Image 1 (cartoon, rainbow, N blue to C red):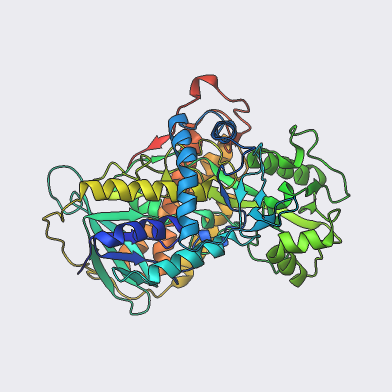
Image 2 (image 1 turned 90 degrees about the vertical axis):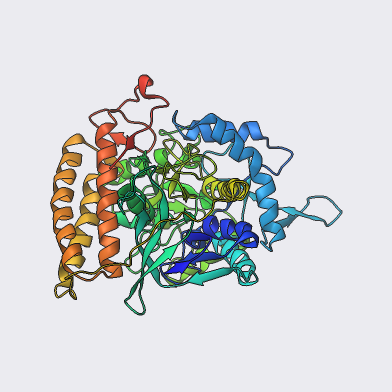
Length: 531
């Protein structure tokens, strides 16, 4: 058994920020499923929404967030995170994060932050590093982690399940004691114990057939927390990014919302601008509205994609502002300075998650959750673009500050080693692969951008049957990373479907043709599930 003071599951902005803040006060283990840079953060193109301009204000940022959240945001949480954002961003800059700058339009030649604008924002407030912001954040944070002797990073380690006092049969309040972990290289299962365990595992995009997320985004944190007894809220609100590159050889390549923020226009395949009738902001409308409009346009026309056109801007501007998108599209034979980009919506962000306060505390003692895995009340029914990295920074800071004040002592419980029992090596991996594909396809077909109760009920029945197969397989065979991820996406799929069935209205990202209107009585009402 490996004993630490702090366990961090995940190596994105939330996990790394937290680890750096607690490391001076104890030994930290960061567990990551692949290499340390592989995280949802690393793929974030847009940036961090934060008030840094004289033309902007906290009130405007709060208003934009509340409007996007469609009546489900916790205004106190929104206000606190927005107001604490600039100081946390400044800390990130001091760690070595380099945001894009521009020359101030006067004769001084001085530089200032180059602020972008994205859908739903009334002002330019997106701090970015060209169109690879997440990659630059990971670089800065990992460089800082490498200099901290109290932090140990365990790559290729997959968490199996949280270890809790109730699971071990102890009476009293449920407490998290650590986690059982599969070492993918050796195939052995080990025990990591600590008085504090932080879930920073990101979202669940791989639950869907088409997603902008990397392969690691299988909802592990939500699934483990749910099995451990934590409350899970608002899982029906899965954000579909409107613009993922449509190309047979392009796997999950995101076309940043910043492209629309800088003047990109959505058009049908025959060149017609179709957003005018959907929202006053047209192509800059909030993501839920844009995704539904694209979905509707594709269904009406029978086309497999729509077009995003920024070719009316100068080639120099496009190449300097979006170098990664320009080069990536060019690699697929698309010159975005001369022609529009074929795009489709894809699963992008999980607005619900493990119920926490702003300090990351769950209802299980010793268990914290920060970032996309958590549901703090910031995003409500639809996340405002680039608020996610902001939330991760602020809540990681608050979680660390709260824990350091409490200084929790190691709990006195005996943790038994992992038991494989009579399990043997799997002989039919095709079962895992088939169930994986079936869940992702049925979620895309039945629980996508537009839903009906009939489709949701069909999905629920099929997922229940698949879970029986997966559970039997889990107990019969020695665990593998593929099996663990399959088990987790099945759990998360169940939670999304259950939550969608419980919400008898259309609000934000949950659009149900059987309940096409929002119910005023459900404003402020969260969908909360317990095991």
